[in-house]
Image (cartoon, rainbow, N blue to C red; front, side, top):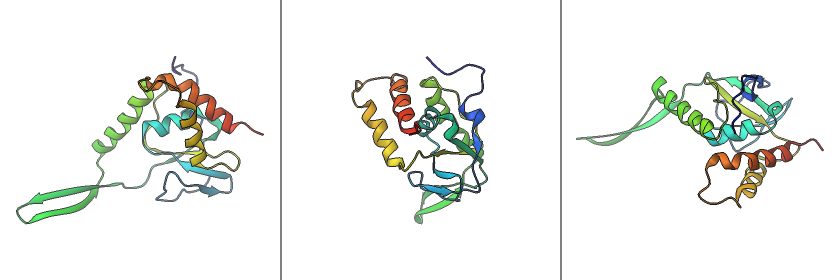
Length: 165
């Protein structure tokens, strides 16, 4: 069922992101570049799956150089205060493992760590159009379906969106 062959996969063949992406991007907004329009995949397994299942030619990566921060709330005798502290390597490993666990569950290769992942948007479509097409495609699946059962349907919907006119 899965895509587990030793042949290069979409993660391996991803092109470099054209230029420097913004430090902070809302993953559901478009990033305009001279090479086309992109959106940034989140660190979630769901977005990784969407990125992988569309045409491999649309996937791009950029080495992660940002220092992420996490919000920590401390409660003590003087009250409660919120701090922002750097995300640790252990924190990042947990995030990466969660996404890769999801990818394994749906039968797809793990996403290499240490990168930001982007997808070139087809034609004049938006990320909202992609989300709507995917949700429309899977709405008829049983509510208790295993995520792997949705992969063929999602792949077909994404291939249709990315098909050249």
